[in-house]
Image (cartoon, chains in turn green, cyan):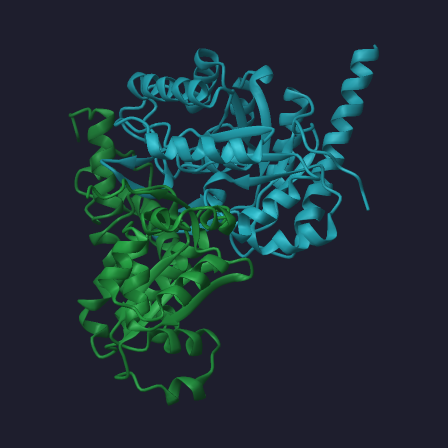
Length: 263
Length: 290
């Protein structure tokens, strides 16, 4: 019989070890059996924890779920949740580390493109749940002088993200979600790399392939470089057209001006 | 098309709004007095939020949270509380509720409503957190009794007393989940009627009704599990009538979260609850007139 009375914090830590780490040794001591093994009682909470998180990951990674089949997905998810349990009650935010986990999860090692598909799905999931924001009014940019325009630092839309993948993650993702087996069979997994832009438009989340140079130019802008710096760094011949398309598609929500260079 | 308006939650029946019913509710505008949404499901932007913003133009909305972890020894998560505040500001709910439970320890979220030991220490923690939440949100919240599957050796306060004390000390309301009372009473050998009789009627601001499952365990034992995956059980309907007789007409919600059926099934359950509510209203009207 247990004689130690745990503080609330000690009790909660013991239950956490039971639910996440499957170790009932301490938690079991604090529970009244009342005809049922404390481990079976704790198992109810452990099952809920696992099923809620498997479901949250399935919602964020639907193509990965189809590519590896349900049983394997659940196995991977259970290992992942023990290694990286959620840190926040908003489960839309859970699973950022899943692509890197899959990259070192031996049972799926043969699917060399799987981590790339997962990285794309995470960007898509981020875009789906991102906060709403009004796009930048282009007239505000047009009102700037040429010197001011060079010093513009854009604020990307909360849903905008970039993914670079060694494998054709976008084609695989499209084919898997469309359940288009013919298209999937026609994809060469070794083809790549691909340079992708993910953004939520009025009609839903869009995944657009960019050229390598356009991707680096966009990455520089998203990272808060001034327009002048981004043009300088990326050496992108189509930069003006790329910028015009980002603006027209609402991929920026605002801008600030960097201080003028001291000459 | 029926006309509804936003605002406070009326003492009538509502249903829990879930993703599979967004389109049907937005398109058909069913005859239901109010809707309740899970706070954590509407913290981002995009399609889900747009549906709820459209739906709330015609229906009073209640926000029901699962993530504040009022019973965490380590304190409230300020980031999550701020997300709750922003969601409330955007959706202007008539009621805001949370649970008498915990789900966060050491920065890990356990994705379930875990039971608290019924001790003076836990009572102090919960009361402090309810006061902090109410001060931060600048509004009263309701606190719901959970379904539980275990009890702790060192608990000293019956759950119904614990809940009544939280309401008394903090001024919060009680969300009386009649199904949870029935489930916990069966699991622990409590008297469900006595539980209801012990709650302060003036504090009860909402009732939840849902279905539960029976899980068979080794050794011929069983536990009732609050899975919100079926119609309300007959015993829970009987207990609901007892609750209304004691509390008077209270806003009542039908919840369904597992194997969510067509919207019509929820509306049928809500109509059944409405009949019990209306009977209570008539009886209260007679009593007032007498």
